[in-house]
Image (cartoon, rainbow, N blue to C red; front, side, top):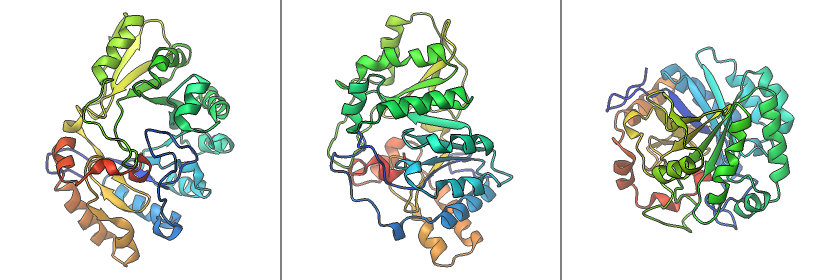
Length: 327
C-alpha cells in the first residue's frame, strides 16, 4: 500500500500514453500546437505496461489512461489488452475526446473497460468547433450516444470557459436529464502552453452551482467518496447526475489519492507541481523493479500538502500545456 507523508493512500494512477491530440482546444494549447515529443522520448507500450506492473505491485488498483488524446496512439489497444490481464488492477478507465474511439467500443466492452470520460465542452456545434478549432462535433456526438447505448459508465467533462461556452451549461444538462450519465463541470485552469495566464476565475464552483440552481432549484447533494474531486448533485426527475470539480480552487487536496505519469515518463505527484523523477529513464537504464519502486516511494513520501504548496515548487507551472502534463 502506498501512503504519502500526509497519511493519504495513493491508489490511483493517471497514465498518459501520448502528448498528441487531434483537436486544438483553446484552453489546452495554442492554435499552432506545441512541440510534441519525438517518438523515442515517449514510453513504449512495453514500458507503459512495465510502469503499470510496478505501480500495481505498489498498491495502485485504478489506472486512468489519458493523453493528449489516447486513441491517437494506434497501438493503444495492445496496452489495454495487457492491462486488463493484471489481476490486482480493479479499474481501467479512459479520458478521451471521443473522436477516434468508435472502432474500439466493441472490444473495450469485451475487456470490461467501460468507465469512459468524454471531454465535451459544448453541446452547440458552432461553440464546439470554435473551442476545439476542428470540425468533429457530429462524430463526438455519435460516439457519445454509442457509449451510452452500450451501457458504458459515461461521464461528460465540460470545462466552463468565460465568454465562450457558459450558454451551454444548462443545455448540456439535457444529457443527464435523459440518460443515466454524469455531466461534470470543471473550473478552468491556465494550462495551455503559456499563452494564457490568470490568477482568478469568474466561473468558480460556487458560481457554476448557483447558475444551475437558477434553472433547476430542486437539487439534492449526493454522498461522494472522500477521494472524489467532484461535488455531486441530483436534479429531481433526471435520470443521471451532475458534478462540479473545483480544479482551480483545489478544495479536494486533503484527500488526494492520485499520481500522474506523463507520456515522457515524468512522475508528477501534484498537477500543479514539477516532475519529481522520470520512470522512463529509470526503466531504460536497467534499474530493477525494486529500485524503481524505491524511487517512487521517495516521491510519494515527500508530497506537498496542497496544490497551492506544490505550485510554489514550480517556476511557472502554467507554461505547460495540459496535453503534455497528462490530462
